[in-house]
Every structure is written in structure tokens, then in C-alpha cells.
Length: 391
Image (cartoon, rainbow, N blue to C red):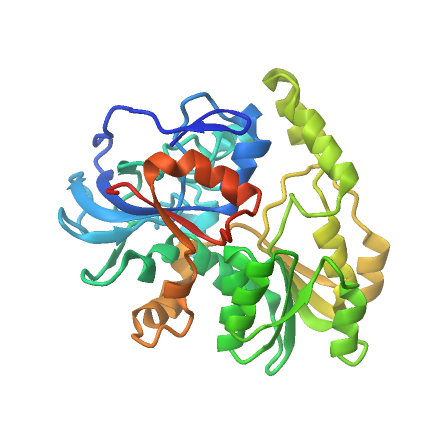
């Protein structure tokens, strides 16, 4: 799955990946998912992509080959690949901040750890929406999982589950407390389920009927953004205070932000040499979700940002945030940090997080361009799309 321009992604034939470094592995991909973050590449991050870049950062599959420094996995093993490329032994990895790995930090752009399939800003590593994937830092990254169950039981360990677990962890919801989840895409869905699993009251907000229904199916109260004043509704449900915490699972492409939308659209049309410095120094996001979070959260509450923001000049209502005494937590998920919490839940036959009830579409890889369009336009009930290279 390769990038060729704004809203132009194609399935191309490319050379098979090979072992380049002694700590590489090559896997045959059996499932690979489409993430909301991929839509940022599809829509607006073209200045940091090169035509032919391979996309995707949520893969799993079977090990084909390993380099001599890779000893914890072997050919034939079934593995999930975390989206962040981390070494496991540097200063940041020792502290379990794997998304800030000092071995793979992209210092040219002063960015954190390299990511699979995600622009020059994060290392321009070939991604996992492909039949085969070269895995750098494979002496640490790949997660062995047992054979014999559907891929969807483990696939979301690559990104969705650890990102959602970290979002709930960062939200610091008090025991028996409440949390509003803004955005009920894949991350928002799992945030709701994890928060419910941990005993919290959950209010989910979205404007897509299928997403609202899925969240209700897993125990969340829901608010339809299309016809409800969300701030008033949340306060009415919480004695006028707002929820103890808010998780923003929307990010830079929030609905209802006309200025940010216009700025993003204008920047996307500029030549790359002009757009890249503009985005890195003066870019703005659609901030409706973040502003909503600041209003919805209770005083002295916590806002956890799992939705991706990319602006460097975003106007923030600092007076309001300061007056309410709000705490913010954010950042890329440190995938392997949360495995000890998540693995017992995904291997539990009762499926407490409903990992088998998240993917709404499983399609051949050669239909990926159509899937990108459907997911971006929120058509066909697409909540989570999984590509199967074998179909």
C-alpha cells in the first residue's frame, strides 16, 4: 500500500524486504489494520512523504527470517509488531518510554522514536500494509503470540489496545469515577471498554450512528454530537460538575473547526518545500475536540490526549484551563509498557474487552484504496478495517 499524493494511495508491486541489519526480522503479514492516523497521511501530511512510501503501522504475521542478533523469536513464530520502533535498552527504553527510544529518535526533525509507515518525521520506515514487512530492532519489538486463534484476538496489540490503555491510565480517573470519551473510532471504542472494565462510568461522544451503537453495546452511555449540546448534557449527567476526566480520541481533524480545516486544506495544496516548514513552525489543528474537553472536564480534572495533534501554533484557551486547574497528559503509546496488563485480557476466552467485536470490515489488500476512502468519509459502517493480504 503506497502513497502517491493527497488522497491518492495505491497497491503497487515492490521488491520483497530482506534482512539488512543483524537485528532485523522479516515477517509474512497475515493481518494489518487501517488506523485513523493513516488518514493524516492520506489527507494532509504529504510534505513529509515521498511517492512510493509504504504505509501502515498495525501488522501481525508469521516470522520468515531473523538476523543473528534476534533470539526471542524464530521462523514460524506468530508475532504482533508494535508501531513504535524501539531498542529496549537505551535510557528512555529502560524507563519504559518506548515511544521516545533514543536509539531510533529522528533527530533530523527533533522527533521521538521511529514509527512504522509514518513519514520522514518518524524515520520513513516501510510500513506494514503489505504482504511482507522488514522489522527493525526485532531483538526487542515483536510480540510472540500463540497460534490457533483469529488474528483479531491479538492484532490490536500493535496499536489500538496499548494506545487506549495508556489513554485511560493517563486520564487518572479516581476509583469509581467518571470519564468522557470524545470520538468513538477504534481508539475511542477501546478507551470506553477499558474504562468500563476498570469500573469507571463512561460517557462516549460521537456523531456516527454505528459508532454510538457499538459503544452502547459495550456499556457506555452515549451523546450524539449532531443534535445535543455536549457540555450541558455531560453536566446534566454529573450533577453539574462534568466528568472527572476526559479522553480526547479525536485529535487534529475534529469536526466543527472551520478555521483549522481551512488552514489545513490551504497548506495541503502548497508545494512541499513551502508546506513542510509552514506545518512544522506555524501549523494549526482543528481544535474543537480539545476545546470541548476543557469545557466538559470537571474542575481539577485530567484531560488525556490520545488523538494525534500536529500543530505548532495552536491557540489554546489557557485562561480557562488554568482557572479550572486542569492536568494534561499526552503522547504516543509506549506499546510494550502495557503488555503485562493487556495480554491476560486478550487471551481470556471470555474476551472482556471485546477485541473480536471491533473490526467491521476484513478486506483484501488490493481493495485498500477504496477502504481508505470509506474510512475517511465514515461510510458503510466502517469503524475498524483490517486488510488480509492472503485474500
